[in-house]
View 1 (spheres, rainbow, N blue to C red):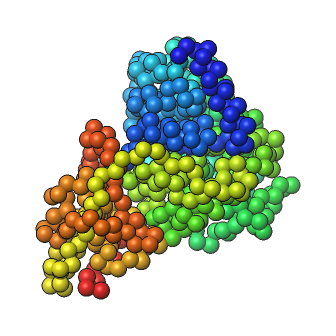
View 2: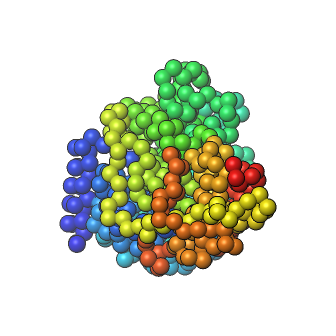
View 3: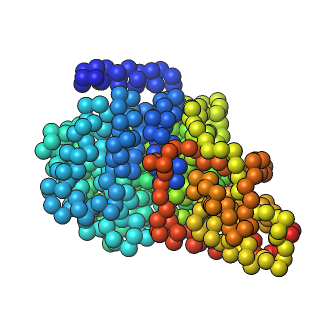
Length: 489
């Protein structure tokens, strides 16, 4: 397909989407999963639901191949661990652009390169501060040298913790003192190059970190007690957070910069506030707010540019931020929608179109063999449960989660099954020193799903590293507490 045909196809797709009344939404597509959906399946999922923008966390060639000719606008990314290399010498950045972009720029609608992801998070303790801006400069120079600088802009997705307010009012917003000088340099560089400021805003975290946070503010609900700030009134977290950023930008002399919300969403498991019901309520409120077609009190004429977080659940993500981290998807790991939505914001909810032609592994589950269990070997069951959770995914068993209320025996079976499924249903993965048993009857209970993984082929499965084991220790601790009682209950 030549460039002219590609451009025509792209704008035709955009006209179709606009005619359908859908909001101009993007989504984040991550793939930190043991059994990721094939990229072509995901691209079809995006197209079926009218989603015309996608933000990636890498520049995987298989993903870009699947996006060829789709017309979907793409933000590719350079992971944080590569920032030092990009910053060191310009040639490294030039090599990255040559190896990752040149083969795709005429076939994929790449608009942005994300240089790192939230590199200034407080929890990183300054690990990436030194390298981020030099990496950004070098990538933009490399894009310019390759004659891509006008079409593709380099930017840095930043967490909203890069700015703060001393009074919780937007007008008192300012960039963090430890990085203010650096952020000022970055912002002016972005503006000079016509690149946007990308910020990730999470109303969920406000509620997660403070049970007393006014819930109406998180869910865009009517009746929220407004926060008055000078002549402006705020009734939701999004507007207040966004304008805190605008005030922070104004205070460094920049008040007309394009802003993209790179991530916003609500998880569905792993915490008492992370449920499908709450997620649906959040998205209903968010889409209604976006459908108003207006900006914030401080910038009323500017429409929001938003990427939802996230498209799919990812069962191998780090749980350091919280057990909910693996459950941000609007769709499950296999592309099945979790709850009805209306992407137009008109409140006419219906189930999104799920992934098509998904192939699953055999209908087999691994459970605790209760015929050989008694209180005398409780210690052995506990040991094997700890092992399964440390090497699998037990986040749905944690307090307040979808499987937290099932019986102690079912807790163990869930842990065994997740380990078994994540290891491709290998027979020895259901041994557990003779305590495991393979069954062919679905053992899911109510809202607690005992999943079967999708069959993606050996070449696509994610291997298990030492880091994944360490990340699961906290999960193991909570499950250990939950199952330490008699297994005969």
